Every structure is written in C-alpha cells, then in structure tokens.
Length: 556
Figure 1 (cartoon, rainbow, N blue to C red):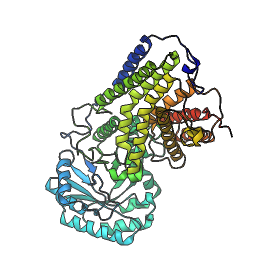
Figure 2: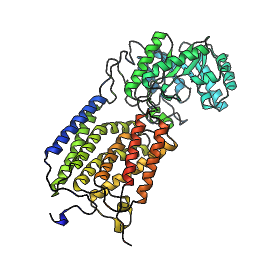
Figure 3: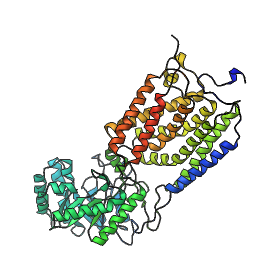
C-alpha cells in the first residue's frame, strides 16, 4: 500500500488484514437481541391488585384545576368558560364523589353550579396570600357561593399552604378562619403540609377538622414509591395523635407520572398508579378520607416546579383521557413498539454507515473499532425511544424545545458520524478546527459535522451541569440523549486519539467543569438517585474525552 493511501497524521495505525463480515453481522445480531431484551424489560406492563381509578369504586375527592394547554392562573386575565368546566365535571362525576378547588378566580366560581348539576360535592377553596384586599374579595365570593349552593359545597378550606409560603402569620390566619366560620354553616378547615400543623398548633383550635398534605415525593427526605403508602399512613397517625379530637383529612397526596428523580423517588406512570392504588386501599381499610392531587395534569405548573409539577394528574391534559383505565395493565412506555422499532432502525443505520465507509477504504479496522461501533449502536438503539419520550414530556418553553431537540439530534447523528470516523481512522476534531484560525481548519464535511455535534453536546451538557450545581431542584436529568451523543465521542477518543499535538484550552476548561460538577452533583443528589449517577458518569466521560483532545500546533 502506498504511503498516500494510509490514514493521515490525525488518524490511527490500521491493519491490512481483512476481518470477515461475520464480525459486524454477529455484532449487529447481538445489538438487536440486546435492544429487544431491554425494551421487553422496561416496557413490561404492571398489573395492580386494585385499579387506581375504578368507576365501580369512586374516589372520595380529587383536586380540580381547569387549565388546559397554554391556559394559566399566573395570568390574571385567564377566564375559563363554562362549557370547558362543565365538560370536566361530567367526566369527573364518573370517577369521583367530590372535587376540591383552591380559589374562586379564573372562572372557578362556576364550579359549584356545574358540579352540583352532575351530582358532585365541592370542597370550596379560598386562596389567601399577602394581599389583604384580594383575601377579602376571595372570602366574600366563597361565602356567597356557600350560601347559594348549600347542598353542593360540603366544606370550605380557608387558605392553602399560606404558612408554608410565609405570606401570613399564624395569628392572622387563625383570625381569618374564625371570621369565615362566623359567616358560613358548613365545616371550615385550613390546608397545609403536615409539618406546619405541628409548628402552628394554634390553627387547630380555629378549624372544624384538620386538612394535611402528605406528598412523599416532595418530603425533605424523599420517599420511594414502594414506601409511599406506608409513609402516608405513618404521618396520618402521627397527626391524629397530636390532634386527637378532630377528623384528619388528607387534603393532598399522590405521585407524579413524569419528571426528575429525588434521591430514590422516581416519577413514572407505573409508580403513580401503584402509589394511588395503595393509598386508596389503605384509606378503605383504615376508614379515613383522602383527596388525591390531582384530577388533570397541569402544564402551567411546569413553569414553577419543572417537569414534575405538570404530571400529578390522573387524567392527561391534552387528550383528557384516564392514564390508567380500569382493567388495563400499566406501561411506562405506552408507545414502546415505536420506540423499539426506531431503536432497531438506528442501530442498523450505525452498522450500515460503518460498512459503507469500509467500501472506500483499502484497509480493515481493528476488532476494537467494531466493538465500539456495536456498543454505540446498541446504546443508541436502546435509548432513542427513552430520549424521545423525555423530549415530549420535559420540553415546555420554546427554549426548552430547542435545547432538547438539539441534544436529541446530536444523539442521533453522533453515532452515525462516529461510526464513519472509527472506520475511516479519523480522530475527534477539536473546536479550533471548526472555529479557530483559518489556517488551522481542515477536514471533510463529515468531520465538520462531527465537530458541530461535539460542540452542541458540550454546550448543552455544560448548561445542564451548571444548572444542577446552582439551581438543581426542578431540573431534569438528560441521561438518555446525552449518553447517545457522548458514547461515540468517548470511543473515538479511546481508539482514534491523535498521537501528538497540544491540549486545547477550551476543551481543557470544559473538561474541568464537567469533572468538578459531576463530583458535586453526585454528592448533592445522593447515591439513591440513579438518574443523577448516570448523568454524572456521562459528564465524566465527556470531560475525559475533552481533556485528552489534541490539536495540531500551527507554525507562527
């Protein structure tokens, strides 16, 4: 072979001995089997002993907010029309005896009339804050509704978590509760996280019954889904012992179906169904009342609480369909067949790219290169469906859609470009080769494309890493798409690393950022959070990849 036919100075040495096609074909078969096995495992449906939602055994009560799509109570001009609320009431009457509201704004003052028309009771909420004039307006409207619909409104909740938010003192709140009690004939209560009842015992004397919120996912020490029902029961008994003379209503409890992990607490469809089912079964056995949060997913909450805030509903927001119809198994990936098929297709494309690259090369790659291609193809095939599912659930604002779409696009094209580079013997391009001085640039269109994918992946990874360091509470872990993008880059660094050159400053800076952030995030999120540990491992892999980058020095 002539010297000009061999790989250039930024490529690694290759052997001329031909490797049989049996090697890539065997790896392709192994890749397909692995992808199918993993999808069979993660998409196996779960059947519960008690259906979470069963029209034959209606819920005691469920929290209701009417907002759909872009509708939000954060915009004071939002006004939900009567027909929309009536449609929701008709649907909820099939699964619940009662709805709980939180205010009388945005059209929610229409709920008692429409709920009564379909046989629903209402736990009427009064929203209190630090604006006394608004508080008085809320109280006046709620009192009027109570008098207008005495057979519908079963009780009044004066304030929701106002002590938690620090917007009222306990003394002012107690006085407000007593003022409302003097104007209505139905029982009056206040609702807050259970700890705040223990810290503000004077509220107990002002109410007719105690309404506590127990959200195992949001506890200071998050509770796993498997222990959530036991945790709810333990807290209920603790509060009952502290306040023995009055009924304890669990005013909010439930579990999210999507979002980021908190320690060992994993939001998922199956976990939500399990927690709801077990809590309802417990309530039936122990004979206590439960109000589930909430009836419908609320997209607007994602602006305040991240992805997880928008997915506490028993019914999805867009199609208005029950997430868990009675008699049907529960699947974390309802579109698993599409995810499996697309994953197999991507794996095939990665192997196909590698084989097509070899047709133009008079040398044969090492076995390790084929193994790297197989690893990248398999990981991408497994994670593509997961990454798409995360994209659809976790993208909210325009910026979010752009960011996660770009990361997913990088996760799809990088395995293809990486397979080409592995087979061609090319190393990973540096940032300088893309945006540095003109005389230092070079390479083919595919090399530029690989470099662009590297830049996109690095920038998005850096933004997420910094977010987890400085503002982590509501951020989602991009482990699926990030793994798809980083694994081929890491393989190129290991197998096709340049033999000489200098370490670029930009890559070194990003490498330091990822390595330091990974250590902090892993410690901060704890060892029970596998989403965090996985993401940190990918940050480390990307950091090592960038640290080992080498650029050709340009003569002065």
